[in-house]
Image (tube, rainbow, N blue to C red; front, side, top):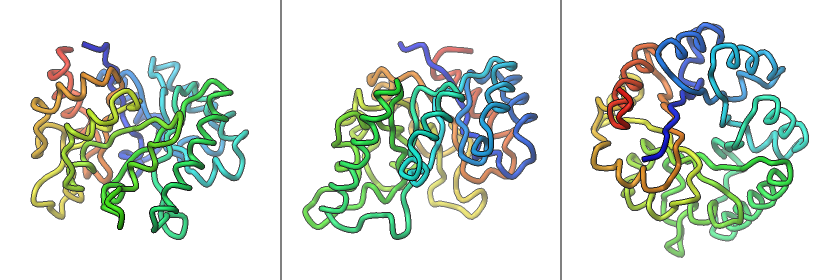
Length: 253
């Protein structure tokens, strides 16, 4: 069994004040790491890194906008190194930047592969974080996710909650990508989706069969488990309950 690291996506606490007390609470719960998003570090990543270091929290991944990478790749690399990242995660593409054709998605995957090559030269990996739209069928039967992950060096941060909501077979998708998976977003959902907290819920309190899915997750060799909730009404309760449940799955406590 991998030596798992349990991380927390800081986007889930964005509505609840400064990040410093959030980090303190996560360290007290027992988290090993955090995954920041742009709002946590774009001004200056040094204070976030210093606070995390003081609390014993690693920062192996962060969500960094594709637009930033394409505007100033050197700056993104500098931010990543300051934070101590292993993998730069592209979290989303939307609006006019989102392709709508097979050829468009193929070209998009090629762009990501080029960025991955440049980041590799700097000792960093590049990963993609999915939502549900990547699993919608294109006219030729392929899906955006197939083209996104086709490029050399492009890794995957598999968001289990969004894969489930897309109607895809989570176990099958995990096994298909295998060694490409750099991290998991361990994310649970209600069904039917309710208005409260946009239908996201504590890990283990929703409808995803985590025990049944765990053989596929553990089989990838990826050891980074990132708790994420897009819109919690009580982030501390979510963080604590989800940590407790996942710790039980991995035999930590």
